[in-house]
Image (cartoon, rainbow, N blue to C red; front, top):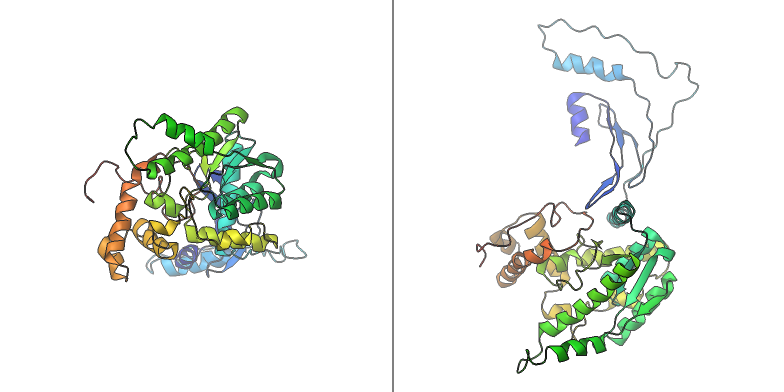
Length: 384
């Protein structure tokens, strides 16, 4: 955009951008200076405050601009020659610096760190807590939180039930050990049984279903919020954009918290970010077993996300088309996706609007994030 502007108007242009987070928004810096030919002379760092320099001679652009834009019948404007910057009492030129743009994963990482760090600091929090499940989302949330506040101000909690796989227990403990943070463990089986006993008469004659699954998530949410109230810790939720899109989350359960780091990051991107983090740290901070196992909420025996959702490699592209590119049902189907699947996903996205309206804020990194960018009516019948 800047390149087109300077070429058309024959201008030097200095673009100065803010650095920092403000609620969902992250201002990424990367200020730039361009010459009239569209060449970048200098650029700042991304997601960091920086000072950039470039020597320019405005007369270079002024003469050309008037030659091109002033009609012939108007006498040409006399342009005073400006001092020669190259020899005006200077022995050497200022050396400008151009910072190369980062990879997609590095850019996402820096945006999430800056946005979350500023949200924590600017809203008066000093410590944060993350509930680990042994899965990829909570693992990535934990390592990002670690880089935001450090080990002294990060607290990790693990809340297993009878449905928690043994491997998930090992993974949660290994991740906490890799970060050097004590892991607080609260087993929720007894609490779940108390709920079931209390509701026994009301649920008499009915089979267990998603109600009992959601009870587990809400018990965990209660524990995290109790710790938050007692110690003034900020609860960081762990849901990603894929789950938020289709309502694959429990209201007042895993959505309970103050800030959602991964809210605008699709599941497939969460995996990419996890691998990037390990490369950046040059060690397997996030255990390999977390990266390799099939995603699961572990709210019933042998549960997997693919029991009710298509593989994320198929789901995420459909969500991007519908949510970010505003593609309609027919347009998505015409791209080769199964008609029944597309209809089901669109319906899930529309029905989950009431959940998204009650979810915490999170860092915006895509062209269209839920909340600020995409707010649909909850009460409507156009999709039924």
